[in-house]
Length: 412
Ligand code: FUL
Image 1 (cartoon, protein in one colour):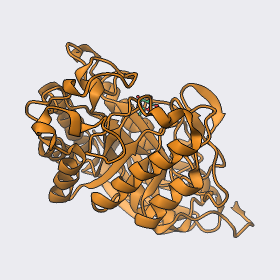
Image 2 (tube, rainbow, N blue to C red):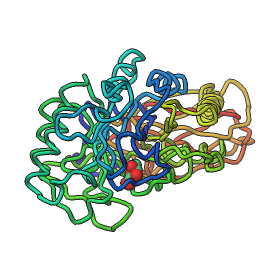
Image 3 (cartoon, protein in one colour):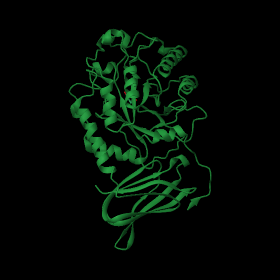
Image 4 (cartoon, rainbow, N blue to C red):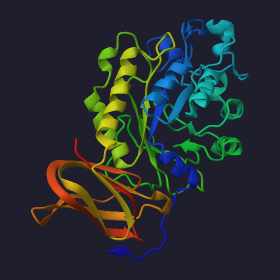
């Protein structure tokens, strides 16, 4: 059935670009790294910030080697400590012993990204537990806008700006001004979940999206700590793809000593992959540098294993096709066992498919092997292995003519 309506939300070109990147690395590094904590109160001495071997190239090269396409650094977390020498406060790298107070982590990371061809983004926590002016709404809005302007103007192109709602439950910021600054300097950057977002939080920190996870939404949760919905400015687009964020060490965004046991297993990471990228969202996987300023070998190796497994499962399709219309056939060279199906719509034309089935020809009979609703940017389905030479995709409900960018099958 083709729905009558010819009106459905379309993504912007930068949104499509961002969705095609699929995989990003999140990097939490800061005062907490040196204090064995997740949420500093903003009173730890800058003297403690002293990475002995900081090398942002190591972080970014690893991300690139693992096939990740963007990198987001916590320029300031809730403790208020700034990783760049901001003019707005002394609570920054400037007051630390690292490089004699002349260092700039944001610059080193931005430069490494540029050199490696990695898209760069920044996280700037609205909640600030150090800034004295935080209690004064207007004064803090000024302070925050100045910090944001520094980040927007001194570090080259930015793919994404991450606004974290944690700690800001019930607080109102001057979003119009904040978003205005992002748009002025980086009109194509993705804005995460607050103000006038262009991408939304998936609603948990486990890295998993529900199925279906439609690309359209009218609201999103502000944080883990309340059921409040983020306040969005008028004009927020209806097309708002989700990003799934999760740390590679269970519940730990920052590095902690003697914490290797919390590293996710390869199986857990693959499960996350199926339920994020496989449900059509981007995956933002956090990997943290330690107190040396280097990503530890165990984390780096796990990330490499993860990358190798994705490649192993999804880079050699048995057959590939694409097409327009309500039915698509996928013919294999010979009868083979199939255990994964991957489908992609051409989302530049919207998310048109509302219901589908995949059938396999087995002993001359068509058997339904998959039924679903959303396809969107990507849909990956693991199935019980079935021997077949031919598959067909039936798009049983859609808005307008379905446009399938890719249909593939695999045998692992
Ligand atoms: C949460 C924060 O409270 C965590 O520390 C981390 O930054 C995560 C990405 O978002 O809301």
